[in-house]
Length: 427
Image 1 (cartoon, rainbow, N blue to C red):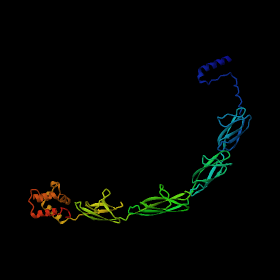
Image 2 (image 1 turned 180 degrees about the vertical axis):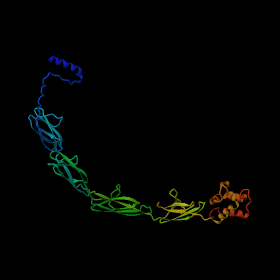
Image 3 (image 1 turned 60 degrees about the vertical axis):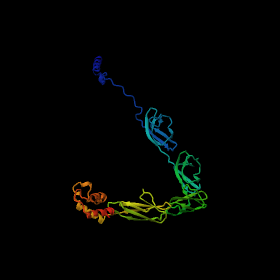
Image 4 (image 1 turned 90 degrees about the vertical axis):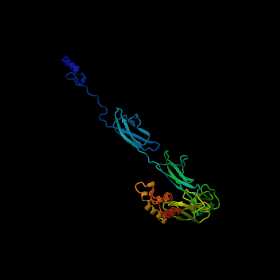
């Protein structure tokens, strides 16, 4: 019977071997039980006591485990188990600790090592008075014990928290506690300069170098004075022969402490300009400007910024428009004023007679879209600007228009009188 069962299983294994799931056994045979779990029924408890870590990573951890025997300990999943349950020189942070008993059963827990109270440094100062090195800094530190103090990164630590005989300026102070942790703070020693400087100027006259500055100082003794940073200190507080402009007045006391004040010498220009203008005629650049100046002597005159100074104060042959007139005195002091040359649009009788004559005798001269000769004799400035052509045609040749009847002596006289008067719009 046993041989028959084996043969049947062998056949089934051949057909279904790739599925790897057929298991045959003798009828009535029981498989062996699995081995016992060594950790079953165990309840391992893990706790840890810690001390806080300061800046030198001096935290500690003592691990306690219960619920089994033969424990070893490690600080992280990648750590190595050790027999001691104490770990030293730890930085602040969160740790996952592990314990393992003699049977290899593990248990883990999360433990935090706190950070000690950070060191806080503050500092107060007293100012340095009148440029002397008598300022002080007092340093206060909290968050530790056994502090020592130093001034500046290159300084040396000392028990005293007070630093004396300091010049005005910015400093960095340090405090270090007994464990070696240090912190710093910035502090400024102010300058208490009690020297007060004032300055009184007088103005220059007409661009001359005759201004003055008188400097006064209080708050100390033994003063000397100078003008501007590049100047030289002198005993006198009065500076003469100054041109108009901005200055800085300095005063320095006997100990070398100085202070300054800005002061301006203004220009008192008394030159006054009065422009007299004559209008320009319409169609002619015949306006004039006469410049009158007072308040100084030795004047010269020019027209516009690009002009050239000249002795004459009269400018002629000017078109209508706006101008800037300049005068300069013997000291080189300038002044300017605006002038406007108007235009005279009132036609003179001589011009009016000529225009009327052209309108009466030269109708065909300016008819059609293209006036004869390219000129339109109904336009005032065409008549003025081409007076020579009108005179040549109407008086010398004697006809108007070309080929037309000659002008009478009276008509020619109208043109001749206007020509002789200058052939202007305003006569």
